[in-house]
Image (cartoon, rainbow, N blue to C red):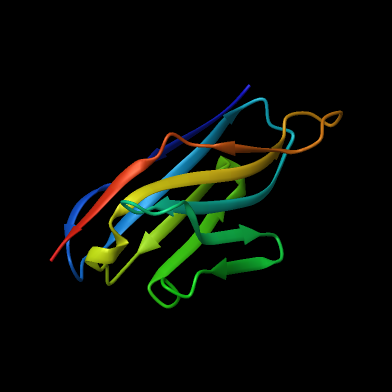
Amino acid sequence: QVHLVESGGGLVQAGGSLTLSCGASGSIFSINTMAWYRQRPGKSRELVAGITSAGTDYSDSVKGRFTISRDNAKNTVYLQMNSLKPEDTAVYYCNANIAPSRWEHPHDYWGQGTQVTVSS
């Protein structure tokens, strides 16, 4: 079984910074893409940033302000969020594409979500 556990959310003023972390644990053979999604109030879940061995990708709304990184030795992905805006307020979810063993196809796993609130 695979678990993703996020941390680092909270309340911050506009212009401030937060760093989210997400660690994967359990039966892990390999991890492909790791990503952060968010769900803003009244909106559907959207991709914020993703990272693979080939590089990173960001949504236009966070490009230049957010940075995704990963520590493969710790099976952990981070999201450094700078210059936060009230419209960044959302529940942030970690996503990882993980093969639990060499005999299984990779599956998408999700964390439980962490609330980020940016006050104006």
